[in-house]
Image (tube, rainbow, N blue to C red; front, side, top):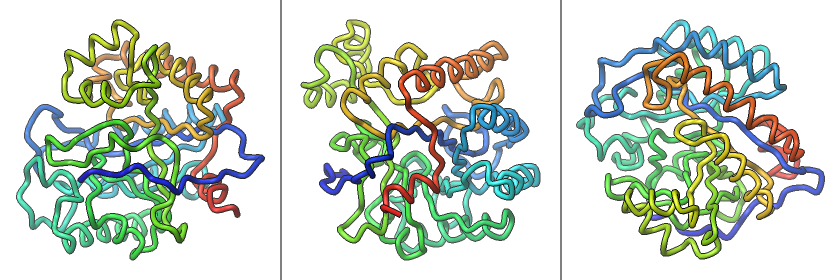
Length: 328
């Protein structure tokens, strides 16, 4: 599924300024190199959410946790999320991993790991099951969504509107997952926009920036970079063109600060950061293998947050963001 370039971008109010949002794909641990499977995963990193939350609160940041079924099926996960919901120190959204989310009717494979590839009725049933589980166990009705693996499909926005969702954050701009059967976001930039003309469903893409001498001519080269890891590496090393998503996972603080500056120079007024919750404990993702890596993870955030403060980019929570986009 190819997502076309949107033409109905959000018009921020004059006093919005420059803002950033931290989002966490809050999910189980699994082997990223192994085939998808319904069981065999763990939720050992859940206790580390408390440490990250304390870090965020110290910096007056309210993250949004996009939560999948394995987390709301875990007592410790539920207790943590109920706590931040009651204290209003974080937002809670839906994060659909279809292979661990009932009902279990589809074959487990790469194609079906993108929820948008499922039959419409099954995608809907899984979405509702997760939303209801969050409401029943945590006590909040989530209205924001991020598809696991960024896997929106032809029916996703219709289903979100049907079930009262007001925001989606599934788009990862300038990435193409079509070779695996997923969506193609190469034509989409990082500016938030409205799906349709009635301003009922807000899209808040994760932020991806092109940096380098050729960033203004990124179209053709970016498509080649996406298909060829070797060409991507050559462009990055030569500083001719770098694709930089705002994440501590695999992206240095230097690159991230450079991307922030480029985004601000391009007048992007909302920056959306993201990472996977298993990175909060060593040994669960390729990005945090050791305690030293985890220490570096937090050092990354300290460095980046300091840079954001210097550039007068202020944190925003999910409720404030939706209200500002809607002109409330």
